[in-house]
Length: 151
Image (cartoon, rainbow, N blue to C red; front, side, top):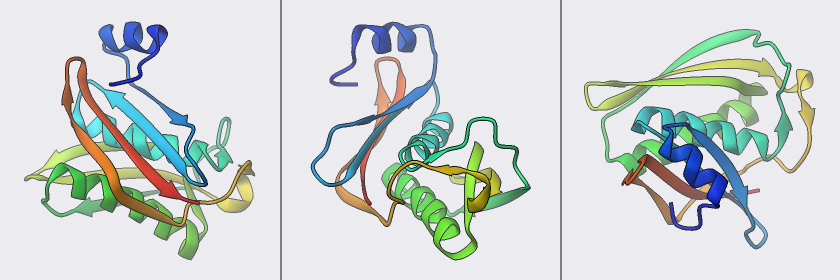
C-alpha cells in the first residue's frame, strides 16, 4: 500500500493483516490490509470501530450474520461499513470481532457485537462512507483498501 512504513511493509511481507487510521481533514481515513479480500474487509470494519471506540477486553453479547449480495469489491466495502454504521445508529451495537467469507460472489459476515454502553467511546461515531477515493484490491502483498468515513 502506498505510504507503508517500514514496519507495516515488513508485517505485510510476512502475511500479517492489520489496519490504521491516517490523518485526513475533518473525517476519518482508514487503511486495511490482509492476505485475502475477506480478511481485508474485516480489518476495515475493525479500523473504523477503533476510530470511535475502545473494544479491547469487551466480550460480545450477540453474534449476528449479515449476507451482502454479490457486487464489485468497492460495493462490498461500502455496504459492509454502512451496515456497521446502521447497527450502531439503530441498534446501538458495536462489532468487537468480525469474520467474513465469500459466498457465491457476495459476502457472508459474522459480527460479534456488544452494546454501545459496554464500550468506551473515544471519538465521534461514523455517519457515512464516502465514495470519493474509496479503493480496494489486490496488491503486492495480498489485498488492501482505503476509505474515508464521515464522522
